Image 1: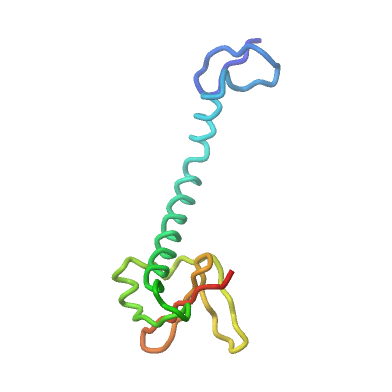
Image 2: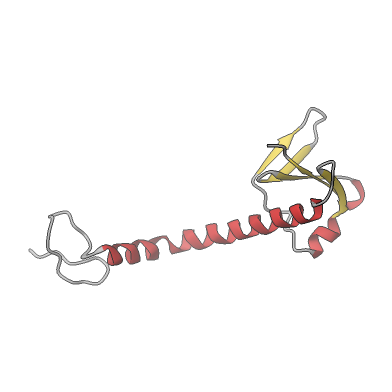
Length: 119
């Protein structure tokens, strides 16, 4: 019984457990198989990178490594508050949300404290 490539349908020669005729068919098959997950991950990573870049731009030039800014300003710059990489709760019970090393704390009256974690 002849085996055929799962991607292109050509006959396969070689090992008995071989499923693809060459690397390009194997890659194309797996890319199609994972495209939904890949697109979701790519979109989330793009949002995270944009959020991090916005925080870094707002914090740039601040000597103390922290600053306050209105939440509305962050929204205007395209910041998406629904996406972050992790949270950190300090001793005072405040919960910071972080995008990699850049973090923020929601304050009263739509103010946001932006901080950068020291390496």
